[in-house]
Length: 349
Length: 77
Image (cartoon, rainbow over all chains, first blue to last red; front, side, top):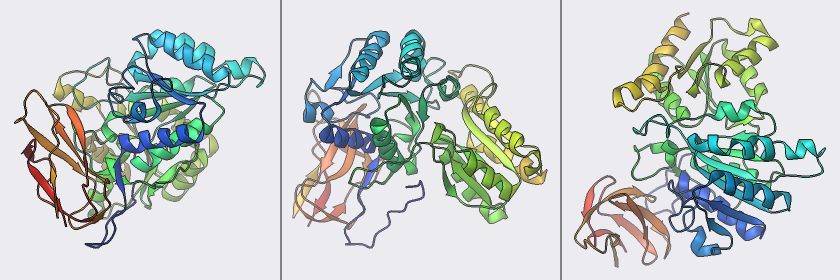
């Protein structure tokens, strides 16, 4: 599966089925609930409302309130409930409405969900999915716009996956549910195909009907190119592809890598691309310092400092909270304009 | 032939206008009865548009255009 799947059909022919990312995600959860009675969903507004970003739409009607639980506003209580259920053999998907709310529940997430399998020498498993919404760009300010995937990836014990398109959203969710480890599943609000968010043409695309897994820990080369490597994830994949398409007529041929997983990180795919292009731009909507972009840079240079023919570049959120003012928010996010400017610097260097 | 109507999402305001958010099918595609073909929105509430019958679909309202609830937005022949 990749973001470049096309769905063009001749007029009159049966159309390839297209879904929004939100619907693809809900379909994946529903198919796993049909397959395995131990799969349940819980969280704030995930039942009657279908999830505020549509990730659980239609599940309550299909599976009923015993398997699709609307919870009170206590993240500590319901994430803890999920951990207990997982330890007893269920496979819960727990939605933390916005990742920004992780703070109140971090003891449950990091001291329990992420550590029980380690503390027990692997005898007690926590096959749980913590699903959460990330990202900015729509004026939701400091406490509702962060990505924070670097925070979860930094703390050992959790797999972390971040889809960028409908097909991967479904496949990564199914893989996360079937995985015996705790998996943090982080979707950007801007890729969900929601009617009330900014329209994004790649958030509606072909999605296979049957259940399938998108492998955790495997990046996708979504655009092959020879001049420079852009390593990115989530909504920034779309921006990077837009920039690549814009610059192609000028003779700049970008390779774009969609990481899809942070933990495990597919270092091999990054290294083989950088070995080919010799130039690396990392685009990350998370904070710049002490995070994903620095980790990728370190993995490249500690493997072979000679791979890079020019200093690498980073486009990330400078180390400030996400501002509310539209102009200031645009200034800190990794917009296509910032990516394009960084590409120009990189290929000239 | 069957008409596809903009679904009634606001009971309080039956004449309210909404937006055709997404067509999941292209103009002229073959659709199955009951297939999800589109998504609409009134205020911030979204709703599904299902094909009323099998056949070839003709889209009469473009994405991001406004339409009244109950208005004919597509036809299936």
